[in-house]
Length: 454
Image 1 (cartoon, one colour):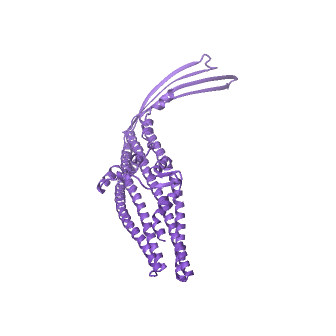
Image 2 (cartoon, helix red, strand yellow):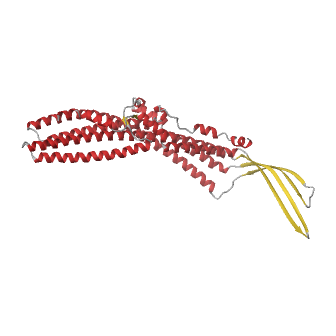
Image 3 (spheres, helix red, strand yellow):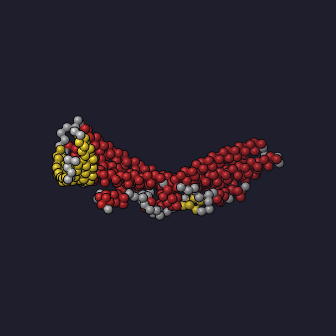
């Protein structure tokens, strides 16, 4: 029995290491695999690229539209017994250009740029959410395996106690009460073991969904705590400057302001220039030699809105309300980020204290169990005392596992609250997902014309 107690820490370590494949899988490897696998990140990237196309559509309103057309017509007639026919062919080009719209298009372009920037920051925000979920799933599996191993070891202990109580009863040194108490604890321990095993299966399924592969041999060691500043004030300062959620709020305010400017521009004049040039050829019974007519026209139009049934005024009011709404939401976002930083910082401090206390409790509990067993063998303690001491030791070990897990999760939660839980900040060996290059490419609005010319 003494050997069983002394070897408990080693048995737990070996049992935990034996679960999973032989190949080690660090937190960095899991984060890297998840970054390449996560559908949420891919969806955010596609959304950012889609938002970039809105910039092109807005810019197109400042540029002319040019079109070419060709049409033909063949007609026949019968009048006064005479048959006639005529063929017509027309070809031409058209030009339409809004040269002034009270700067509404400029405001819409700014609005589209802000929306594209917002979508780019959403990639980083989704990235943080995905990576934090991976860390939580990683630690759920690791702690789940440790709990399974611990409760299996606990079962072995209770089984040994039940057998010991039965042996003492057989030789007339024990009681049936001792046997019943040991068997009851064994049944409770088996139920706890099965519950831990079921929860582990769920955690492993979540891990596979996020990472794309089944968890292998996990190790919670990492060096990302170096990214955490030395004080909570520094952490708050970093969060307020660079957290993606705050950057999203700033971009949303810009977009709303531009939307308000565009709505107000509806009250102003619009000037449009139009032009057409073409050739018309016709030949028929009435014109056997055919005719060819060249024509061209150039015009302009200036329009000033006077009354639109209240639609313009409603649009301005709505845009102003949307701007106020985004500013209020930005204030809420600042508060939420600040709260997240403080909560994660406190979580780290609390986990450190719990780990220290749990380590002391485990050391003391191991000594107590060993001593109670000796006293039981001498007749000064009962089997129930042994079972209770083991239960307290197991509880302390579970507290240590949970506190160690909480420490890792709180560390990454603080990085996330600061806006630094990104592939770039973590130095993951991946290609960073970004729509910036795509946006720069599609903003070449003359590319469409060059493509047609080629």
